[in-house]
Image 1 (cartoon, helix red, strand yellow):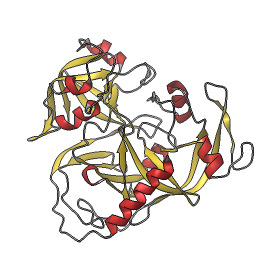
Image 2 (cartoon, rainbow, N blue to C red; image 1 turned 180 degrees about the vertical axis):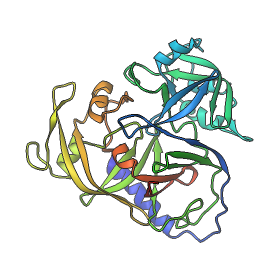
Image 3 (cartoon, rainbow, N blue to C red; image 1 turned 90 degrees about the vertical axis):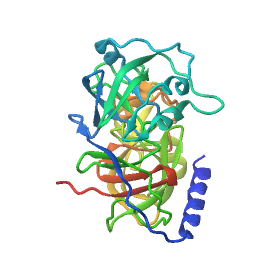
Length: 350
């Protein structure tokens, strides 16, 4: 699987290199919010307001769709929305959230579009939902299971990239600010339309099932990585460690990560990689990253335990490599979804 995706990335780079130069117009800033760091972690939350009550949603650009916790539903007394078999595509067309005159409805709806729209369990209807300067009326959100957001989680929901996909999104983890902008019309792959820095890598990206996938090199090997802001730790799947990296359990390259086990009783291992580099035009590298090596298939609760995050995924098979906040909090990223590009640079802490 990762080879076919890498081939797509390589093809993208080849066509991008041949693109003609063009003048890039500065995009308009649609909105900007300050992120809040979750105490004792590198995770960050986004301030929102639900029916006039301030809440915090975990920034989770590794999954979809945006969800609210069961604890928050109970605390706010939110009413059930629609029957469990109704698709999110149908339910969310009733909202009208927009930044200025640009509706984000199409972005929110995408999670359930297509011939076989996804169906979700219980949902609630919100009288109003505000983020930044934008307010939606009559919005429907899925309710997260306890296996996705723990009852004692220090946030009230997951804010996923289904919310902003039709915009260009900038996240600066150095200043803890997130900005979404009108899509850039730039056609020159070597021009950064919004912000410039000498140490920028332009990285091709693919969005599949809500996951942002980018190519990286790690120990000289090309790997497809998923960017996941809800994960505290960077995690490699065990078969990648063994078959691609050539590691063997119990050797200095693959030692147990303390007493950590998954739900099947299998040991979780650890390896410190000298550097992880983003593949693209330019190079940006993170160094000395302790990566956890987990079983190929884990339950949501096991993944939460392994990644050290209370935002749990229901996916049974973990990606080849999950780039968690132990890597991402060193970066300043700018995602141009319409052009399938991610710009990456190191952060500058104030």
